[in-house]
Figure 1 (cartoon, rainbow over the protein chains, first blue to last red):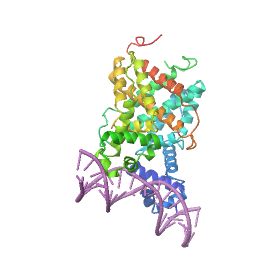
Figure 2 (spheres, helix red, strand yellow):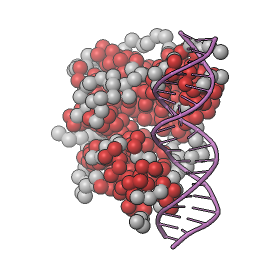
Figure 3 (cartoon, rainbow over the protein chains, first blue to last red):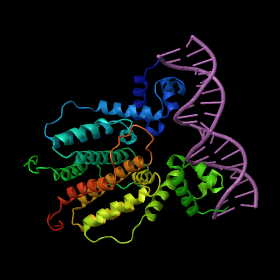
Length: 191
Length: 191
DNA sequence: ACCTGAACACCGTTCAAGT
DNA sequence: ACCTGAACACCGTTCAAGT
């Protein structure tokens, strides 16, 4: 039973999707691979690093090939792809958002947003603030949504809809706020 | 050494602020109060509940009395107060954001945003989506900011500024997106 | 009402040693 | 290169029993 790093990350995603983040422990993952927990440290520096690799793999698997041309459509595409990728695995939003917060992974969406917004002609400061604001929205909304989709049990969480159209409305709202700050406001405004 | 629930929550905040969330354990808190860990369960159902109470107390302590009148100024006031309250204690943003995500506490800011936006004359659907979008921004931004302010160590986190003016720009951006959806757009637009 | 003592069922991580 | 076995230093929570 000799494994490689790839096996460890793949199996971690399986455990995550099957049993959830709380049950994704190094001991559990070792057992699942038929190996002592200590063996995992041959492939991965620590649990945090493993989770960052899991986050990156989740994003890689959710990757869609081409991007639309206009900056705002590109921004939408990045945000939508990010949400869909996270929703595809149990607790995916928490894993990806946490990895991003620790600065240990999940960096691609930020970079792509920066690219798209730069193409849009925004000043650098605004590009960075807008990119982070968009990510805060997508991470926050999707975590909420996934908690809602899964649980149904846990407890006193209010029961408002967090669905596709709610995501689109929230995103449109942030996007409009960004659009207002275009150097030449009418250039990228669609009819 | 007889304690009440209030003592437990107060001491939990002290431990949080002094040693951080990772070191706020039931065993550590018991030791700090000169009591066995099991004694805490006489005052609090479990750790999750305790953290929700901590979150609520952090918000209560950051409470400022009066609110400005126009809906958009009220929204800004709620968001700013929320950020300031969370920044006042180590790991405050994580604690409050998590409690809110679990629906076990920190409900006041959402309710206040709903009130302010309803006064602004927005439709109910938009009010709820806008309130949640604002909270996602404030929680996300403040968590980032606090991680940045504290750490300096941890690791490969990028080093862009997340300061007051960055918060204000991000908030203004979301707020403008909301403003665009006013039933009578010019009514609440300031000169 | 509040607390002790002991237990249960776990964690992440390290490290010498094996193949 | 990859893994075992054993240990270290912890967790949250329960529960009978004490005052």
